[in-house]
Image (tube, rainbow, N blue to C red; front, side):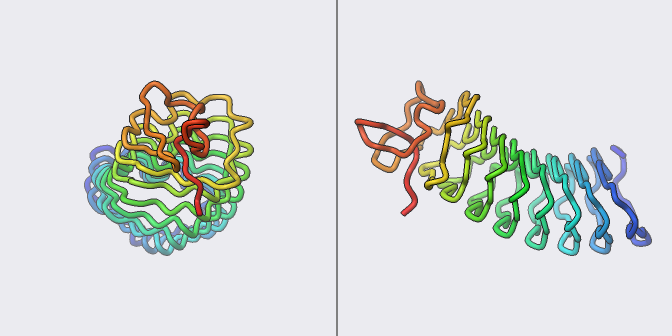
Length: 247
């Protein structure tokens, strides 16, 4: 559907649909899409549903019933013109995959995911990667106890100045490479008691280009040390780290 510029879905009956995988994938030239009346109560996968809808400026998914959805990987990835997206009503209690969910949504300045239930999510690979206009991301309520992959989670979120992951439980995370890569304006990363790197296998370039990052006791960014070595709460000169305890 690469050449489609408009699509009339007013008479679509989606009440029995279970699979919306790739439904509008690569509809590069669509400038408007009305899915506000979609009945998604039986849908289990929304993998790549709107992926690469590069010309859409908004998608009204406020009425989506996502209570049965298990896969949201790539759902809005590369929606490069989106300036507005309201997912506050999403029920994500059964979702296991959020890989690249909002990746390359470069024009979004705000995104409220504070109500997301992530208790069953196992991968957050590149979830917010290259959301370069986002000024903040509230992930304080995220349950990450089952997540194994956080690689590139916030990479190239260039407008962020702080990230609060103080409630993250990283005890099962094995991949964390490029997690904050390219966050050039990031000054503070808040972590809590759940920050655990004992199972980490791959931390390559975790803090690459985080040139303004400062740990809680003043440790400044060193371009020669960008891996797990400094992925700890800053202990000052005796035990330097790039992270800050949330008080």
